[in-house]
Length: 319
Ligand code: SAM
Image (cartoon, rainbow, N blue to C red; front, side, top):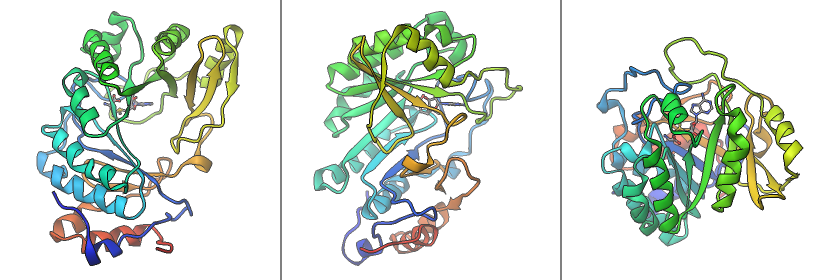
């Protein structure tokens, strides 16, 4: 897969985006497909994009490498479900060369965990050290109801395989009214008992979920207030570059994160941009901005057009 060197590399210098942020964190969707159908994320009978619209693994590598050459230090692979993309490990392995050169600090992924038992060892081999696993409940029947057909045992086995391989695992859980809100203390005790941080997420009105959105939303301020009856939460100053704010929990000794897009935005701490699996760049989750990077990527086999296009959309600062 292609790397960047020589004159090409000089096209890519550290960048700030139109909001004046120095971009260090790239989140890349490698597929729109998923083996689960979480009811707040996808409809049961999803229509996925034609394969030709998706970036190839080589194109994804070129794109990520271009951003890394421009100063991105952390790449997170996501989806859809990243581990259902065929040969995705060849992309992970290829991107890991940037860890080897020191150009990249961290290569990580967000997964539903269903395929993790197969891939945990190889991820670790490729230099991945931390992963996020999405898990909203420990109750097998609720898990099936949320994901429509998921098998929680596979996810739990995946988490154990990841831990056994030496990966640090963080659990992400979407807080869902009348579904898992009562279970959050138990989920937290379970995660913290295994040395895993837990991050709660407010459900957002996004994704193609088919039928109208039933009332799923519960503010995390409410969940936090409830937890405070039982636990001592102390705000931490951790700046992960991600959207979560963290608290330490005295009773469990673990970390609890809050992602609150609905009640409190996180623009001031955000240093990341997103790319979809079709090569569309979004510099802000909360805005409608979008730039097509697939066109310059496909217009020329080298990275000259791509670099110029990225620079046009991000105002470039000194080298
Ligand atoms: N398949 C991977 C996974 O399950 O983590 C990666 C993609 S998934 C879209 C990433 C995260 O977004 C998951 O934690 C999922 O629960 C969360 N998510 C999906 N739809 C959401 C929504 N409408 N509101 C809040 N979070 C959502």
